[in-house]
Structures are given as C-alpha cells and as structure tokens.
Length: 368
Image (tube, rainbow, N blue to C red; front, side, top):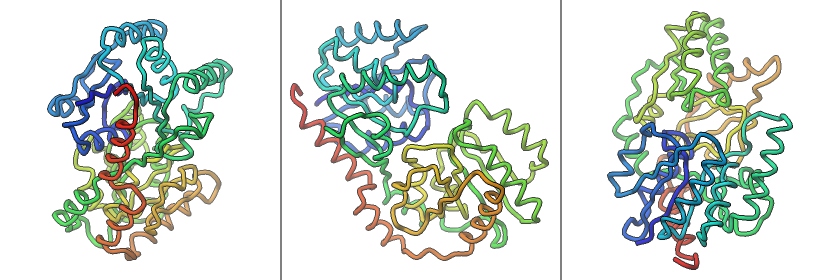
C-alpha cells in the first residue's frame, strides 16, 4: 500500500475538500491511503472520517510562511516514506512543492481548484502570485486541474496535466432522490437553494438583492443558504434589515445537501468566480435546475439542459434572475434519471471514473 500525502491546510466542507473526500471514499484503499497536512489546530469537518478510513493527519503550525516552509522541509526529511505529495492549496502549492523538492520527494503534484486567487490586484499580491507560479512551474512535476480554466490559471505549461473533473457518486444521489422524492413545499411556493461558504466570493449580497426583488414583486418563496463562513453575522443582519426573516434562512453547515436539493426548485450560484463547483455537478445528478453567474466556467454544463448562465451586473440582471427562477420551476426536465446517469458517466463526472484516473496516475509514477 502506498501512502499519498495531501496538503490541504484543513478539510472543512468546501468544494475542493468534498472532491478529495469523494475520491478517498472510492479509491482502492488496499493500494492507496490518503494522509493529510493541516495548518491549523482546529478540528476539520472531515477529520473523523479521515481517521476512520485509516488516514493520518499531520499538523504544521507556524506564525509566518518562512517558518511554515522550514517546518515542511524538516517534516519531509523526517518522513521519507512519502514518495507522492499532492498539494491542493492553489498558489501556496509553490512553497509546499519547493519544500518537497528540497527534501527529495520524487513525485510532486500541484492541483488547481480555482480560476484565480481572490480579487486582490495590488502590487504586493502580484509579486506573490508571480513568485508562486514560478515555483509551481519549476517544482511541480505533475499537474492536475479540475477544469481547463483552473489549469490555465495555475500552470504556465500544457505538459503533464491531468484533467480530473469534480465528480460525484451519481448512483448514490439518485438513490437519495428516490427516497426523498416528495417535495415538502407547496406547488405554488418557489424553493430556492444556495450551497457554499458564507464568503464574499459566493456573492450572497446579490442573493439577498434577488430575495428583496422577489418579495417586492409579491412572490411566495423560500431562500435557503447552506454553509458556514465569516459573513454569517453580516448576512443575518441584512436578512433582518431587509425584512426577509420569513423568506431567507441560514441553515448552517449541512450533511444532507442531496436531500435539500431534492426538495428545492432551483439552485442559485451568483459567484464572482469559481473553478468547477462540485455542487453544480451534484445538482445535475439530482436533476435540479441551476442559475449561475456568467463568470462560472461553462465546462460545468454537462449538456442536461439544467444550467442557466446569467449576468450579475447591469440594471436588468435581477429581473433576469427572477424571470429565470420562475421559468425553471415550471419547466419539466428533458432527461430521465437513467438518461442523466448515462450522460454524466460518459462525460467523466462519475466518481468511479475519476478515482480510476487518479489511481492510474499514482501507479504511473516512478519511485513508488
């Protein structure tokens, strides 16, 4: 059995982390075991499950990047059993893989999960970004992208790139749908769901503006936010200030996202940017229509007539989102569950196919 060291920083329920866990659950653990490096003492959402599967968690605690880099070098030198290091920390992967190279780790993977590193455009950030991209280009000898746009951002070469879609267990989702087939809302009520971290990039300000517009126009609706994050208090205050307490609910961190999707009429994602969101693949597996910002990569559309891309700027944007919410609620799905399953499997977004791709990559490495 080969132990693969994943550098994630933590393993809370984000898109990249969920994808890693999907792979971990489905990879042959008699051949590969996943271990993790965290940069926090806080217990992560997936920590207990990792330990249950036999994974190890190592914690690197440092007060600054230089100290963290030195501790990583020391860690790799003291743990020479790791022949594969798989880094998921976007630009910070540059330092992680440089440390692995200095310590003699032969196989170093950089994994791109996003199309950019926030909205910071200052000179200091540009220098940092250029430096990390240089380190990744020189010290990652294997590259993985969740999408072509994510890979284009993080990698300055087309060599040795594996495109590994953010896949889901489609059969498991369909089984949940059959068990939860009854929608708890009335036929007339519009049930809107948003799944994601309560952070600026997810653009909850737009979602609340949409809720205000729906209420202003007299529609009967519920809007549920499933996730946690630093904007929780701000969003809660705005819900009260906008008099949306009866319509908008903060559900917190949830483990029953498939069940919530079955009961929803539409998933919204007005994000400022994304890599390739797992939740949109999950929605298409369930058969839930989604309205997303036109900044989200079109690679996420699996051709099932469920993805609707709209602008999030301009005077008419809110009206377009209101109209589309009502349209998709009243539109019948063109594909049956079985047809969606076949289509998703063919496009490579089923977890079994992704787990095999990753296994084949690990097996191809030298010094393993």
